[in-house]
Length: 361
Image 1 (cartoon, rainbow, N blue to C red):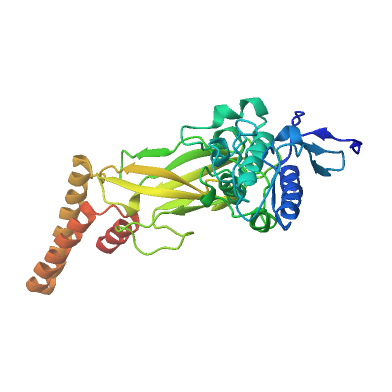
Image 2 (image 1 turned 180 degrees about the vertical axis):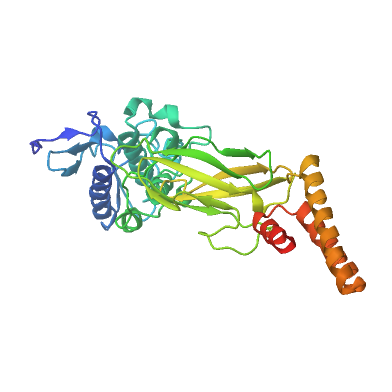
C-alpha cells in the first residue's frame, strides 16, 4: 500500500501555540469532520488526539490514522471492542455505548485543551474529574469567555450537552474572538478611612496592574448605588471622587478621595466601588469604610473672649438706645444677637462665622 508523504509534524510536538493558531487548527479539523459526517454513511474517526493531527509550517492541518474509524447511519452502533485512546475517548465511547456525530467532538475538545494548556497528551487524564469533565480553566491565561465556553461545550461528558455535530460546532466557533485578555491585580480590596475631625478630606491609593503580556488593561470607576445616597451618575458622587474616572495602562495609581463634610459626624459609612474593566472578570468590587470624626467645638477661652467682646458691644448699644429712648428696640436687638451667637457657637462653616462677626461688629 502506498501512502502520501506529508511534510508536517504532529500536534503532540510541544510548542507554545497562540490562541488564534489553536482556533485555526480547530476550524480545519472541524471542516474535515463536516466532510466525513456529510457522507451517506457518516464516518466517526474515534481516535482524534494530538498525535493524529499533523500541522505544517503554513498551519495546514491533516487528520490521520483512520484505523479505528467506523461508518454508519446518523447514530453509529458501538462495536463490541472499545477502541480509542484513554483521555480522548468520549464517555459513551469508553463504555462501549452508541456513538453519534458528537462523539468525535469530545476528542477534538480534549485535543485543543492539550494545545491550549501545554499539557502532554499522556497527562490529560489528570484533568478529568469523577464526572468525566475536563477541568482546565486554572491552567490557561485569561481568554475571551465565549472561546472558553465553546471548548467546555465541546468536551461535555454527556453527548446531548455537546454540539450535535461538527457543522454546528464550526458555525459557533468561526465568529468567536479568542485573543488574550488582561488580568486585573488590585493592591487592596478594602479601603478603610478614619478622620479625627469632621469635614476632613481623606485620600486612599489603589495600585492596579496587569501581568498578561501583549494586552492593555482599561477600566472605569463607579460608586455602587446606595439607599442613603442622593441620585448620582456613574461619574458624579456626592462624597467619593476619583483622581481619574477612566484609565488605560498596565500599571496605574488611582487616588480615591472621601469628603467627610458631606457625611454625618462620628459614624461609620460603608459603600462599594465597582471597577469595570476589559478583563475576564469584567467587574471588580472594592469595599469602602469611612469613620467620621466629631465637629470641632470652640475652646472655652475662645467662647469667653467672644462673649466678653459681645458684652462690651451690648453696653455700647444700650447706651445709644438709652440716648434715643428706644428701650424696646434694644431688647429686640439682644434677642436677635443671642440667636446669632448660638449659631456662631455650633456652626462649622467659616463663611457663616465670618458673616456673623461682620454683622455684629
